[in-house]
Length: 353
Ligand code: AMP
Ligand code: MG
Image (tube, rainbow, N blue to C red; front, side, top):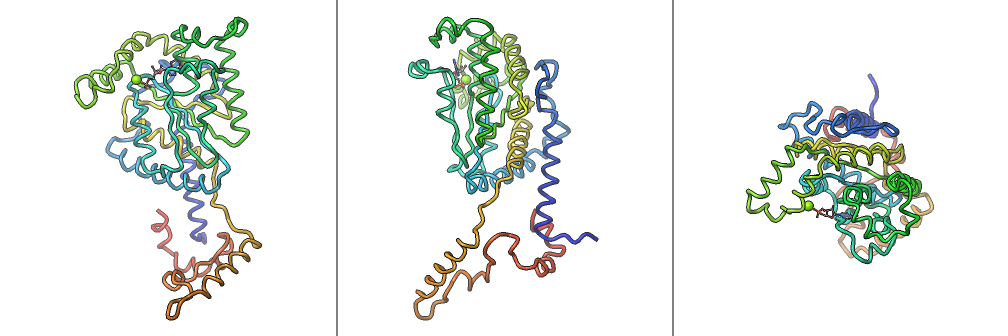
């Protein structure tokens, strides 16, 4: 029999979870360098064998997992995560953010929605406004629409490009190919400096979009979300499909790959998005900082001073007297592990679930 301690068990669980997540999200990943077409290569109704009745439990697990890793990411304060969320109208961007991030500490998350650029924004280079909103180290930032609008809506409606006041020379040649390269270079720079990008395209079908737009019209509480502009954009469906396919083909890179999440079933899109983000966090593998020997000595001296201040009749360390002695320092210093194993025998697997 393998002698498995509680730490080993957690690591094994993490390893297994990591490989299961990797396997689950692989069909969504756009292989860097491949030429994809949205309508041919990705099915908006795909559900990877997941049953709807299991979705709630799966999402709950996914959310718990995110919360745990987000806490570690914040504590470590070394890496940041940028979730780039792109989709056509009514594909479920807002709902995905609301559901997937629901268990995460709001202090560690920033969300920013990008609309039609302002006059000030148009007076800068096109990546300026996105660079300004990047998450800090330790933070998960979400872009609800993103710099990718610069090769989507701006491409489908060239009047947007006119408003960008570019010099003539910057408009020569294949401007979209150039923007793909610039975006790839920018993302590479960010990655090299500690930002992990998680790029999600929520893929909804034309018929499901129609249903959802009608739902917004039919339900009074949802009508505020309806915009006549959405219907006009829908008329350009084929142009968008082409621009999106081209974008996916050119900007899915080793350092920042795209994931196309099937979005005709909202419950599946949420599980899929949580899985891709959860997997990225596991790859970062953020750890709570541990205290070195020198710092420990300082802290022990402070502890002794606080204990000496105990009033008459009070325990020197009320916390310790209530909860028992907690071994300080790194997990490796937690005793020999022998007693823990004796306690943990049989109970450990359940406890760590
Ligand atoms: P919504 O996300 O529904 O609130 O709508 C925001 C609108 O802003 C959408 O119609 C986008 O197409 C538009 N938008 C976002 N980014 C840009 C951009 N860079 N240039 C022009 N329009 C944009
Ligand atoms: Mg809209």
